[in-house]
Amino acid sequence: LCPPGVLPLCCRPPAWDRATRPPPSPLQPPGLPLAPCRSFSNNKIQVELDESSGVAMMKFKSPPVNSLSLELLTEFSISLEKLENNRACRGVIITSAVPKIFSSGLDITEMCGKSMEHYTEFWRAVQELWLRLYGSSMVTVAAVNGSSPAGGCLVALSCDYRIMAENPKFSIGLNEAQLGIVAPFWFKDTFVNVVGHRTAERSLQLGCLHPAPEAHRLGLVDELVPEEKLMEKAAAVMAEWLALPDHARQLTKTMMRKAVLDRLVAHREEDIKNFITFISKESIQKSLRMYMEMLRKRKS
Ligand code: CO8
Image (cartoon, rainbow, N blue to C red; front, side, top):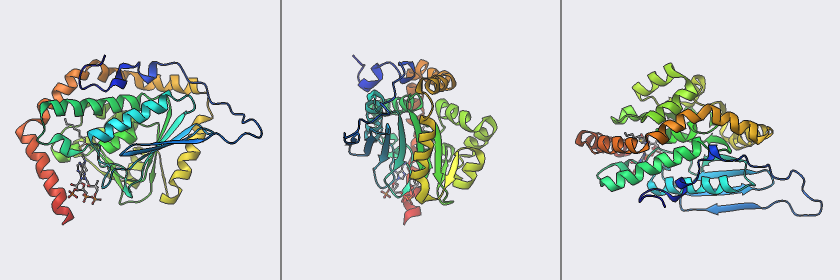
């Protein structure tokens, strides 16, 4: 049994320790209908799995800004688990159904004026999601079709490949420092693994949100494409990655990511304590309130 507050799915062995999945049969018997497209929709995430290609499309649908609330995080983890356990699924494309926004990052209201129990549950859900996504044995492609600050950027960074709409108004980055908070070590590790130490150090200290062309120059995203071509490109990239044998790709992914994943697994409880201590400080609560106020004022 899981301790209280732990999502039941984290009791299972992590994805990177599991046996490789066999690919779905490439042969469709003549005369039979094509493999069905299965969809399951939660409140905040919509998932469609095309069993003939083995590719799932996962869309955030939590207007106005797809902020990563406890509910969205939980649905996200459960959806990933369902796909991970479905032998017909080999890859997932993650994108947004909300125009101009990929995800605005962690829901700041979940970190403001709440109880210690709530902070614990929330942070465990953030950890759980990252462990699942970064450690996924599926091919993961982020189709970033809008702005993607902080936690939204982490979601994209945790995928195997990032394609962004080439709109300079869309920005992406770990901007925590701008909110007066500090990106946790595993956000930083994930970032360093994508862009390298120097770029990550500068970008993190300044809390940079990089416009799409700059994000591409820095290697934060792998490709920029016109917005209307984004999904087509994501499908093409996915097909390229799925052309390789799963076992070789999965073992290579494990080799590249395991140390970083293991580091959080080994320090999970300590990381939760650090988060609670930090977030409950009056000075930090004040910074977050002021930031929310700034967002409201900017709007009016
Ligand atoms: N959480 C909660 N509410 C949010 C968030 C958020 N992350 N982002 C926006 N909102 C709210 C706004 O307050 C506004 O609410 P209301 O309608 O009630 O006034 C509504 O969403 C719409 O926002 P905007 O009007 O600003 O929408 P725009 O389309 O103009 O802009 C943006 C969208 C670009 C996403 C903009 O809202 C923005 O920049 N948001 C802030 C994003 C941000 O800074 N996120 C960081 C979150 S922190 C995080 O993810 C990692 C934390 C790690 C913690 C470590 C601690 C130890």
